[in-house]
Image (cartoon, rainbow, N blue to C red; front, top):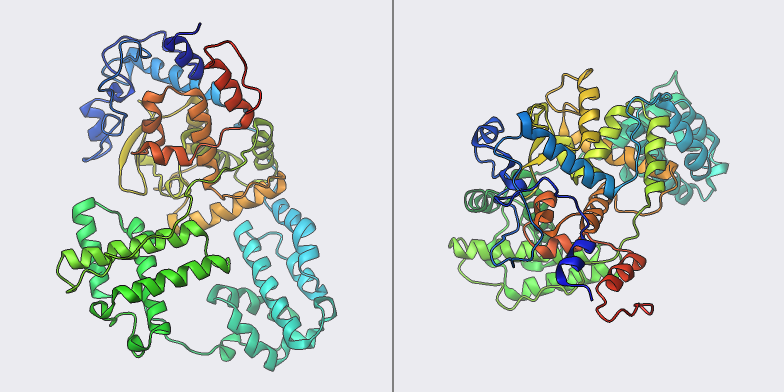
Length: 520
């Protein structure tokens, strides 16, 4: 019969041969190391799972010493590399030769744009854009998809039947510009210039001038200041959560409820909102889910942040009534199983980057940070050279919730960092503007996944799901939350997508009767 120790080691097969019993990975960094990364860094110990109450039969953890340098530095390096080798069987090919970046756009044209954009004029224009960035090429495709749909509606013709004169028709132009963003207008202006190069048509003459009002309500700023003081919430996190959710609610109220008509987004009277109004808003969000405008989880979180916003206003005596008492949340399962790619499919993606990228080392470095260290896309975009400590092979990082941590760098990531630094002197590792780069990164990796034949969805965040799932399969539970930088076990669990075969094998290891679990 297997005892508990044997079962635990079989589930989390890991090598801690050079361990003593004085601590764990959280003790790898000294106060001096912390100061190098700036004040307020929490390091490992504040993010780690508590060890209080562990039995004497637990896996023996160890300290690798008080310094991540000198004679002890090789221990953390070998520890991380041992784990990575267990998690993946990948070759990042640091110095692999690459082709020109235009090949990505040629692939997009041959496999997507050629069939999607069925107009000889549009196709000719898209062929002239092979030398543009992948982001620009993708944006042009999306723009032309909207234009051709509108043109078919206006002309009652199929896209392949459209003539040059149809695109230049001033009546049609007036309607087409309504579906385009300001950026898309610039791209479409370039297309029109190619149709009639000697007679300039100014699209701005057809655009209805509408003054855009930025949502900057005084009470929204009050809430932001309170959250920054009480929870150290970062501006980006506030915008993505509270700001966007409250803005959606205010726009809905102004456009839906009679008593708010005539108010603007920045003069909106929150004191007039009642519990019935919030209940109506809840019904609106549920209807948006039914119409597939919003995902269930998006609607649920939107309502959560709106409720939290009103609760804070009441607590700070900015409104006179507590209007959220009877507001019930939208029920939804926050976990859903994702199919994840195999090692072979991940290697195909790496090979695709090597063949198609104009910056293969940089793109592989971005991928390795996400898939070998669990970085989010926004964290990759914001990473600066000042965050890297090459002497201790560690990265200092602040996540989307404002939590700080110091992470050890696996050798495969370190090799890419060294190679990339030889030709990179920017403040941020990958870009000059993290916000713009994040959009580029999403589009670029969506394209790589298309070329590699992936069909998993999830965008850049899919890589974090892969990382956490592999971590669960191969890493001791005592440090999983440290490496994932998650506070709760529930949050970690949302990222875990174990295959049925793996779960059945692990359950068989837990069988005390010797029987096998074949019906799972």
